[in-house]
Length: 381
Ligand SMILES: Cc1ncc(COP(=O)(O)O)c(C=O)c1O
Image (cartoon, rainbow, N blue to C red; front, top):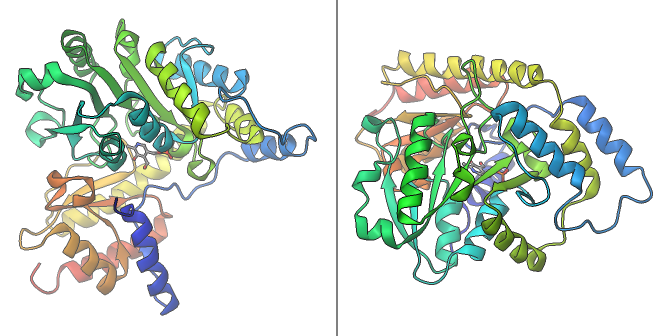
């Protein structure tokens, strides 16, 4: 198994740093802004208690699961039973990988979008599953074309990954798509795993929908969610899987063998984060919106044909056709000292694109755009 792309990139950038190079990192989606101050205060209070240092139950405290249930009710108007429909995760990446091990057997077909978040594929491969890719095309609004999945594959498939708002494409799925996918899952007896890690990073009026808003979606779906992006807590490893009880039981059983729960004070502080006023999230999203606009304007000046994304932390940017995305990203890193993610780390459909992240302060993004623009205009681009 290969090292994860970002682990390799960290090493390359560390070497450049030792040579005195100031690399501006627009590659990874790790929020640069801190959580709300009251979240840190809650952590400090909780960590100071003598009784907060022992093992936690694998389920995590009821208060943590109730906080997720409360946030799902408030944001999506979805009811969740904290006793049976919510599993505590060490971030969704852990949950996505472990769920694959718990649910997929040798030879099972797993439907995966292309481009994709790499853990869907790595998790399936590690479990011995066989990936069938669903291309996400601009002409289909970056939604998988369910009619294009051969019936024999759909009948054989055990699980389907979907991810909206999408990384790396930033597309949002309308409710009607979730309705369609729930009926498809019922017809072909497939479990839908919806990855909603970006559901509260958006630039329109309302939060993008959750699949669990669809009637009886819990019969066929689980959803993964996280405070990494929504509450600027990526390093805290705070996540959940919610929805279908029997699928979640399998995940929990595996996790009782793999980890020993999370650190209690982190879960206390995370529970507090989930009851914060939604105005905090909106103000933070406004900061992202301004950064997004800086990047979009710079790209349009370079005559790049680009849409302004309505959610997530990324700009999916086409590159000149004479380049591969990996060579382009590496040349930009070495020559302009701006680091972006090559599209191909998200699968074959990422060829011809780079992904630019907005998780740096605006001034730093402006500097990166100046450097990138000067570089882009030179040579054979
Ligand atoms: C689509 C998607 N899902 C899941 C994750 C994992 O997030 P975390 O493990 O921090 O919850 C990421 C992280 O970048 C992501 O982009």
